[in-house]
Length: 113
Image 1 (cartoon, one colour):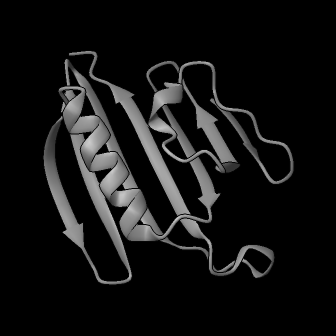
Image 2 (image 1 turned 180 degrees about the horizontal axis):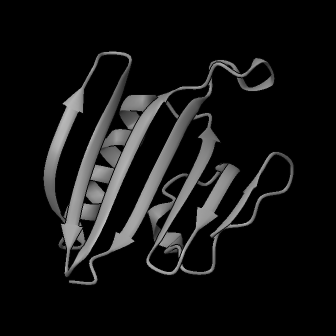
């Protein structure tokens, strides 16, 4: 397992770059193992715009939306495609120097069964 957070954080090698949907994404945390990886990034895009970007792009690429929970202050969605699972959490970042920005957490895992 590898983990990094804080300053300059790189995407894990096994993380599909197409799962970062915003051009101004600043990766703030990344972790990876053989079959999964998680990336958190902040963006200036509004939560609703980020959500719609993921919905449009992933479903357009053949991903099946399995679940969506909208809590009002954030949303969680899960998608599946060819034994690959993705869970996306979108909410507001409350860290002082990034307050008001949208925080996106993307968990990517391959099903080895």
